[in-house]
Image (cartoon, rainbow, N blue to C red; front, side, top):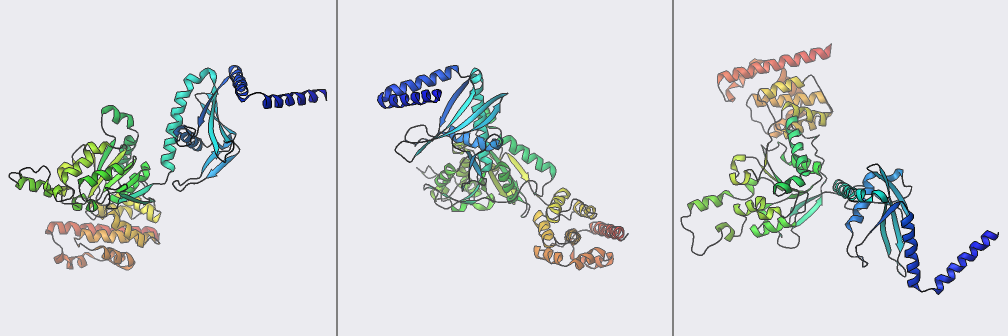
Length: 504
């Protein structure tokens, strides 16, 4: 009881001193106490406030990075209370350390801790938030800088992969404050689902990874941190799906630039300035968007320019010129942002002006054609859930003999017959058989063939004499026709042998 009485007397004395002594002296005593505590403590403490000023205007990026970093390391094992939230711009549930709770972390063999402080401002409803970092005092010089660099890099990476990606398109008002409108980008295409040959898939993913991790390299060699891709191939070869897979792989936004809505080169530059870092800028069907080759033709036909004219005739007419597009992809304005990929697509590579696709503008040229056997197996795995099937050998023989189809055509046939895997594969073989015979059929005929399994069986099992009756409608030499007939006989024998094995 005597000890408790002395404690109460001491607390009463402190209360009286707090009411009697001036606030300046109390502040000095508090500072002296903290300094004395820091002197004898083996730890160093660093405060990271939410704002850089007392007005609450200048946000401290380091505070935001610490919050994102703690989300990325999942500190649920070291802290028992969190505040859960989800924002409109993110597809994940994020959590914040509850007020006045601590999270422990490790770095280079040392234990560090983060404490989230929340204080209510006197005579106000506002709150003052901050993170406090505690680390060993003896090693603070060696730990602080590299640890904060790790926190920043992890936070930026976590923010990149967790935020909601957007698909932008120009609205025809690029000269104003915002020339883009956007919707959430939720395309499901990935490199695992693409109908690509394995070697081509590996080359593209390796190049994209090297680009995304090449910030120091591009700065060291003095090049703008951007990359150009030219995707060319027939319709249905998967150019748009590849762009979506690239965006999902890198977690980039996509800007679909419609050149026909751009009035002149100035608006084109304004649209480029409004794009963000870590984005893919796409111009589809570059050979059909605007008549860029007319610029070169008009210049070659022109003998002497009009006196006092300093612009191209195309720019005077108020349209995008070849020169403006070249400056967009590789000029001084192209380096106004970082970590950007520019993609051109075309069905006919020869129709694109050579100046647009030279190295330095379009660095990687990707040819997307018809389905190979590996691409077909990828489609069969996606649509039918098949890793192997006896008829895969027949499909491979058809592909080697020129009966190739585009991924879109194969995908449509498999989609319509996905309830019966064998019928679907036979429908693909029948379509390839028609291609080998030289009958150029429209997609609707492939659809009809896919709907009728009897026609598939009949096309595979009918005799060569019946094929001979349609010989007159097939163009080509007699020797090529004989090769096709022999090949189709081989197809029939393979199908019979496959049916015999199933019967046994």
